[in-house]
Length: 320
Image 1 (cartoon, helix red, strand yellow):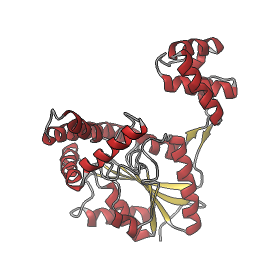
Image 2 (cartoon, helix red, strand yellow):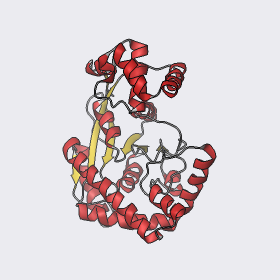
Image 3 (cartoon, helix red, strand yellow):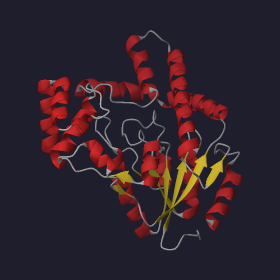
């Protein structure tokens, strides 16, 4: 029986850099404590990227209930706020079922929002969003910027005149609230998840170990069909006339290999592995400074470390 703070519902968060064994640990804890696994990885939400984003396999899905994985098409927009609201819904369901929620992933924005709350902004009607896009297309970003600046200088505070996305967002906020996005941001209207006891686990092995794991995992991705997955996505891009939407590491490297034929797959693999290592390096920095864990594991989670890591976590769970 897990110890819990009075009136608080226990939630486990498993975080860490890519290829550190987060998913395997989540599954083992879910088996032990009647848990469900909730995704906190910004790429594992997409249906078309099971291999390149290292999503759980079919057997994992059968063994344990997984939430917020593989539910969105690659061309659909998705915000941190949408993720936050979906997680909130899953936590309520888990509480009713008396299941242990285990949130796993390495996307800093998601984890920060989960723990510290999310700033609330006015809801924007779809009709207004459409009107803004049409206006931007008609007059161009520079004139759009100048018109917005005339309405309220703070609407364009720290926004580049060529940043269409941020300009549109600022325009939408102003038209709904008559306030600049900067002013609303300063109001600190933050929604937090209350009545939850977050138990945070950080898998934080050496960079050398993670870099080695990145190489091994990439080779397994290629064997599992990453090239075919990329080919299918490229066809969908052409059909839907949607380009440069996929940010998952490895996709662009394989795509360049397939289109340009100026590299062999080994060279493209080198570029993908290096990009993954660079991403892992940024994650190390973020977790070191932004994530205060209840348990920090100095080794990655695998068959060799499984026994003593599970014991360490179990002991801490029973006393926290």
